[in-house]
Length: 296
Image (cartoon, rainbow, N blue to C red; front, side, top):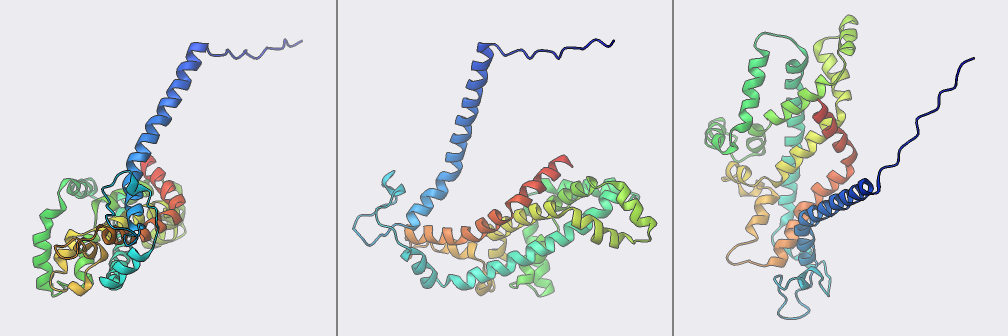
């Protein structure tokens, strides 16, 4: 006869432990709430200013805080005014072209360069990877003079290609894609090699489809950086202002003769909106990609 064993009884935590646990959760939520308000406040204030009807009454000031956070009369005229007055349409198109080419080129270069560094053994692989990663600590401003001289000698200074080509190869992108490739089981690659697949076919048919979340995260990082970049596009397009992106145009709204905080806020919201829409649409893949990169 087999004696029945009794399941161990769960001991309830002491009241003092439960109280400390509740206080810990309350403190955590309070801290997260403060961080949320601190992070979202500039966006909400800019949105409120951009929607304020400045023609309703005299003396409307953005510095009348906190009243400026709650405008009494809302309007979209600030958006139409700044869009038509400063011809933002062509700058929006320039930003779309530059950001699209930058994202596609960065994904191609990073995903292709990371594959041999992650899955192909060759002499000096660790040294090459170390040299690439060491460029992460270099400020991007150190390469501006060399890039401008190179683009001028190539005859592409003041073109879309001149803005995009120097920023396609990034150590961050290669590192992120290498981490994603290392998380893929080696048995899949060995099976593909036994079936006669080349390394390029393995990269295209196995590695890329299994790295879609990481590719999405890298695409969003690249899109945000390219869309908001001001200094490099203004330098590479200094000879052709018609191709300058929206970030350069919005900063010009704050000039000596056209200073209008309501127009500036509307221009900032126009600049922010496309990136926000893309992020919300790809948020699921973005979070999965970050999770994979951290685990890798």
